[in-house]
Amino acid sequence: MITGQNYIGNKQSAKGNKTYKTFNPQLNIENESIFVEATSEEINEAVHLASEAFKTYRKVSGEKKALFLNTIADEILALDEALIQTFCMESGLPEGRAKGERGRTVFQLRSFADLVKEGSWVEASIDTAQPEREPLPKPDLRKLLIPIGPVVVFGASNFPLAYSTAGGDTAAALAAGCPVIVKSHPMHAGTGELVASAIIKAAEKTGMPNGVFSNLNSSGIDVGTQLVKHPDVKAVGFTGSIRGGRALYDLASQRQEPIPVFAEMGSINPVIILPNALKNGSEDLAKTYAGSITLGTGQFCTNPGLLLAIKSDTLTQFISALANEIVKIEPTCMLHPNIIGAYESNKSKMVSQKGLTIVSDFENNVKTNFARQAITTVDGETFLENTHLHQEVFGPFSMVVQCEDTNQLELIISKLEGQLTGTLIADDEATNYPKLISALQNRVGRIIYNGVPTGVEVCPSMVHGGPYPASTDSRFTAVGINSIKRWVRPFSYQDWPNELLPDELKNENPLDISRLVNNKQTQNKIS
Image (cartoon, rainbow, N blue to C red; front, side, top):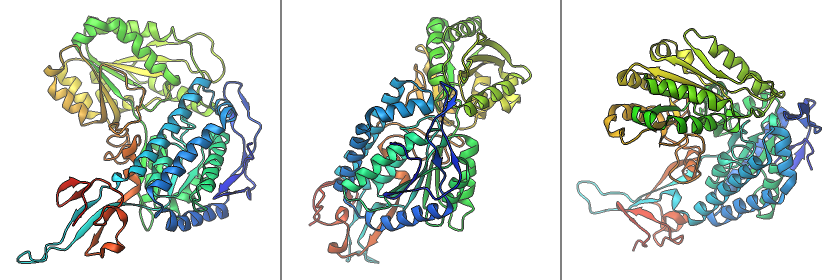
């Protein structure tokens, strides 16, 4: 049952006077539930509870945290059709997408549960003492990763489950030992409340401290601003626009104690199509990329918004084929009137740029909040001169850049802002373009070979991040178990009595984890 209230730890609260509703973009009407925005008092209470919970939760064993995470997954599944229906009503996304995203959310939680239960993720490192070393004795030093403190997670508009209330940021932070305060996204506040109720039930069932999780409603930027500025908040996770992520980053850096903001932001995900691949498979490529550009109404951060190739007759044929294929696809609903409004505005600004040609724009009538997909093209020189053409149009929109030669193609890649992904489409010719591949590697976090960028696998080898502005710190991923490293810091013990050390660093290795002992990876005890 959706109440519209905030979760301040394990209690519900609605002290404020500011209310709002979510919106059903398919029906173009407001949903019935009324949500109450969190007040400053409730924000402070949630952060205080998180700070107090951290004192206990940071010391909870990996086995108990694993039970907590798995129980969250169980409780989310127990929400069953209520969750799926609410997801669809608030997003306009189909039932299949809702169930797929729920499955991904559950998988992420269970993956982190497995990680912390095994325990080696703390990267324990031990250098034993050498008291007889000359000219100075060597101390005993032991290092591991420890949780950073209360984390604020901002729900993402385009992923009501997988990147929101119990999504990857929350799962990783809880796994690390950090309490989480979610700033619920106003577009899917009902979905967020249902998932929050599942987390609270799991916390109570597994004996987690009150305040390990809170969920705060917000219709604008005020709640998020207060959370980021709060001195007891120690880190922030965000998925969304460059403008939003940069604003949070600036707020965090201006604090008396600056804190990290791990923001995954915009990306146009350049796709390079090499000559032989274009010559031998342009028709198939056109079909494949028409599908990728329109997948999820183009509302993925890995949407291929930029296609690059060298001018040729085959490139002209490919552009024509892509234009024909993309209008065969029926337009679909965007997440919210505000999002389609931004899409239409940004598309209009883009197509008004000098030198840009529209080669395909869906012209038939569409339902309200349904997006018309578009393909444009421009020559390489114009693209280089006008950096506005380098910006993301969030939605089913892509641009083909016709480059004069390999040198210009390489120059364009080097001038792009940081991206989440880059793709190389090749036909036994990639070895002839080492400089181009190197330039692409320098701009992205993940390179795809002969595929599409849409689709982010949740696994240890995935990097979902990239040079700014794709993310605020390219050293970290926002997807997969390694994303836990955002919410921890390294900590060393020097000459500490064995009995006072955490289990991960004790001589007897009671957790039987893999550790780096005197530069050798081992699970052995230290005698």
